[in-house]
Length: 148
Image (tube, one colour):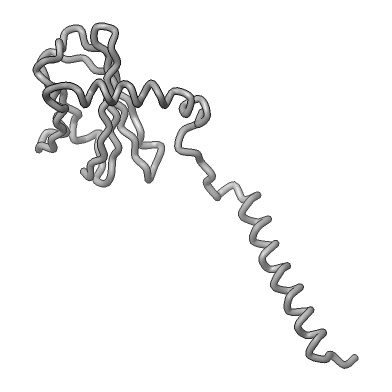
């Protein structure tokens, strides 16, 4: 059988399409491929976004901002002095974009105006910190990205 150039082009297209389809099927069925979302309940979190915007506005309206400082002992989070730290309730969420298994949450319990996150809990790299608290029925939120 003689193959002319038109038949060769068609066979090349078929081989290329088969090659691409092979990798599409392989990657979508492979258990090693990680297809994680940023959060497990993405749509539920999206509906809560307006509350976050309001809480961030409340936080920005404070006369002093939250300060996050890296020290030899760990990460020190200093709250504004105008906040009554005995009545403060909230959480600190540390999110690691590169590995969701390193993410953790800490409840805020203060005896002074600052909180220490020990150095052993934080690996080197980028961390997204989300500090949310409530005081006198008013919500506050502070977000920051740091490289540790």
